[in-house]
Image (cartoon, rainbow, N blue to C red):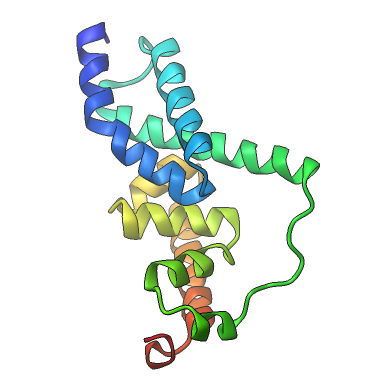
Length: 160
């Protein structure tokens, strides 16, 4: 990989990678750091990465960086102990906000696979490569994550 092809990859993948990182960590600066670190890691390993798998490699690195950030932040911050329930939904009719709240109830891995599948459009095999899970684990995490989202959000009549 040379500088020209690297710049082309940055142009093609930077926004999607940022969107993925931001949807996981909900902080613009952290998401930008994740994207920067992902591209830096790609450049360091440019001779070892298969050009056909660059996209998958970038999302894998970003996924691991976000998980590392969560682990570090859990050591230094106490997480909110009271969950938000449906009454919060009844007060807030912004569907994006409701979906974000619902996504935050998922475990890190469930959230990652749901975002990769439903927001980024990855197939199960690609998600397995990015996350390091096997195909059946990916399917189970997606199914259980969707079930949890469905239970959290409830009937759409209540939300709308």
